[in-house]
Image (cartoon, rainbow over all chains, first blue to last red; front, top):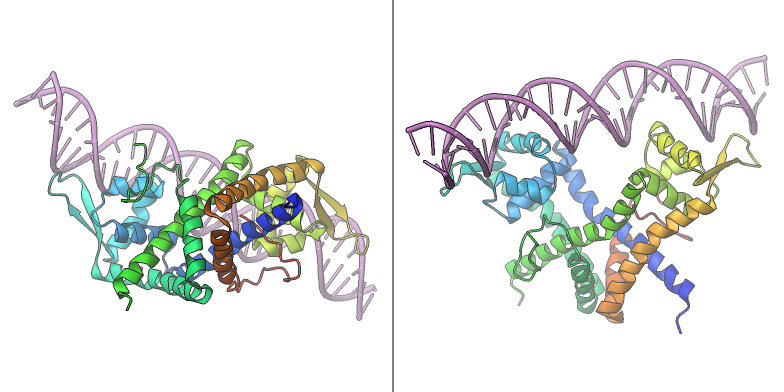
Length: 161
Length: 161
DNA sequence: TACATAAGTCAATATGGTTGATATAAATCA
DNA sequence: TGATTTATATCAACCATATTGACTTATGTA
């Protein structure tokens, strides 16, 4: 039989693990961005646009969960720096389809590849079964996302509008 | 032989998993705090003081990595609400030893227990091997924390927000 | 005594978010 | 066609939270 307090202790340790692991995971990109004078919003814009090219400004606002006024500053920065491109949609010329320029993709790649390398190293260090366990746990957690702002993906639950 | 692009795709999926899972993990405490009109700083204070009772204001400032002016507002809120107690140290009457009142401990417990329950549910859903794999991966990541503000490792109890 | 330290406060400032109002172009409806 | 809605883009006022700097008070130490 499992001691309740011991169980709680293990779970407390897991809470802390989550906090520290996430901090390590995000420290690198933050530092890379800061070097170039960009902030987190810029990173998130690069990230979302990179993974969903052609998305509209409104969609991006929904993904990020910020107001359009809060988005526009950083978005304009990125466009002026030539990292993000905005081209009118063919279907509806009002909507601007956002995408990354080569330079934008390169910066995004530089940031994400650091994170991929970090995870790849950890996964190979811990072994395939551990990596699969990690993915199962994180996947189960992510499934609980009730946010409306999620991107639909084949394997995901569709957002309720 | 492993296809490089396929490998990168799996790693990209892992990046997204991390992002969404963390968001789910932090949504609950944020909501609980917001209900009561507290912000994240208040939570972090409750957490740190709860896990390191008797710590000084300066130590707390170092743990949080904020200025004393930034801390004092929230800290005063918590003291006035009777959640955090400050008693002069016996050794040095200048330093205030911070601790949680019963009410403070109860709120902290309420917040953390939600997160423990969330993780416990996920762990039992995914099975013991997956949970162990998750812990191995997160532990390996957390080990890479180079932060100056960490506590010595013997107790190594750390914040969740 | 002279200086240093811990805590608390006040003021000025910066940043990053919010809402509200408004403008423009494009699409759609009656 | 004219009226209305939608998507994007600003401007302005405001607010929360952080910063640094200067200062006070109480206490400890050389």
